[in-house]
Image (cartoon, rainbow, N blue to C red; front, side, top):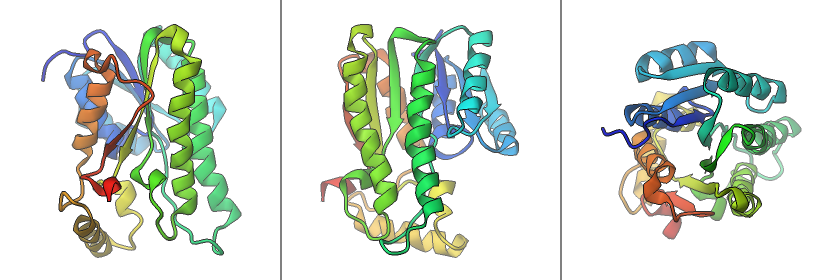
Length: 250
């Protein structure tokens, strides 16, 4: 790895596993100072040990504004600035129309939308002019899938937030882009299956639907996040970057 992010400070919410963990490894490997958040301290501790280097974990639930205040107070105290905000924390819950519960609707929108909105808004005083905001959307935002309507709706909302925030922040030259993963082999997606055998079957099924012939790996998202955070992506703004093996194109 090189030093494309030397001197930069980044926050990655949902950074203790999956896409966030893989991206934290990439960012630190390229010289960044990285803060990761997650709800479970034990998982955060494991992630810090796995990432190594200049990484700090702060236990936080992104849907709780008081937790976010603690996170950004810690970043202000330690570094005084942010160059990259990767609002990645999210959950997946399924439910067909007619079976959707109030609790599931609240959790999905509180974490996937409200938490993301206030993560970014509370980061703005620390984010440097010319900084970068990355948002995790999903290929399902533009697909119809049975039992996935609320989750897909939260991810579709994120797509428009990228467009609108680009305009809100244009005078500060802050770039805002969304990344839309397809089926990626993460603990979060595996958790949608009842057990390990079910997860294996699910990943094989997804692979049969995807033109690339397989599900993706977290590092394949991390490499795109690293590019979008770099000066190499200086003219990419308000975009939605699909990283889905072609699934969203069919």
